[in-house]
Structure formats: structure tokens, C-alpha cells
Length: 82
Image 1 (cartoon, rainbow, N blue to C red):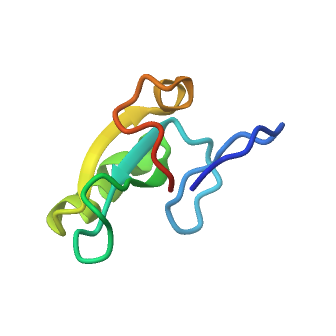
Image 2 (image 1 turned 135 degrees about the vertical axis):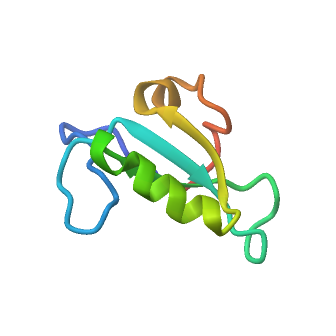
């Protein structure tokens, strides 16, 4: 998910959640993506652990960083697309 600059605050990727996102979960599916590719999901505080576990049990989760770190370019893989 690339988030263009806008007045809207990014929201959590959990189904049905409209809460402001505070975490970026960077992941990739090794069967579909090159090792350096990073897809992203956003998470609020409430859904960070659930979404992390969902990706983790599949071996997809690569990194979890705060949204402001990701946006400032200091998060791991922050230049990758989503």
C-alpha cells in the first residue's frame, strides 16, 4: 500500500477497522515476490499483534515499524512498495 500525501490519515488494514494506523507491517510471500520486495499492511494498536501473527505463521512477516518511521524513511525497507 503506497499512501500518497493527502489530508487523510492512513487507516488500519484489519477487516472492518477504520482506526488510524500507527504500525506498518512489511511482508512478502516468497512464492510470489522477490526476496527484497516488501508489501505493507497498516495496523492500529489493537490489531498489530493479530495481523503480525497472521503473517508470521505463514512466514511472510519481515518487519514491524511505527508508521512515522516508515514515512520518514528510517524504517527497514521503507523504500519498497506495498
